[in-house]
Amino acid sequence: MAAATQRIDLRLKPEAKQIISEAADAMGVSISNFVTSCVLEKARRVIQERDVIRLSSRDHDAFMEAINNPAPPNEKLIKAVKNYRERGFT
Image (cartoon, rainbow, N blue to C red; front, side, top):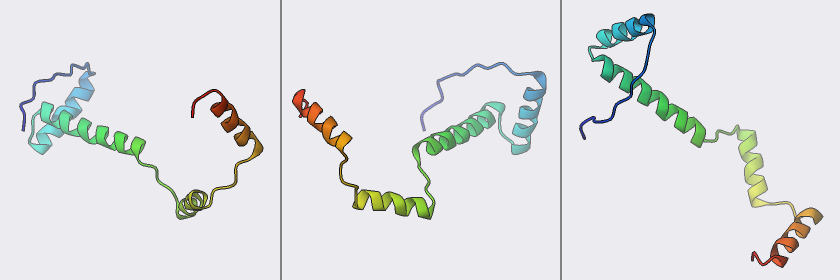
């Protein structure tokens, strides 16, 4: 594993630092390791929630139905495609 070379500085209220310090002590790790671990866990969760779409069974079925059996293009869509092609974006 690569050595930690990057820094993040932050300001805390004394109460917040005390709670973090106490939790780090309870886990037997440094404040730096505790904060890094907690922040990384939260960051990964945030990214996963942003990147993953969760559907109910009903919504999944509706989505798959729309993908597998798309509705025919309506007049507005046909007009938009025609306009797109006339502009030379084919």
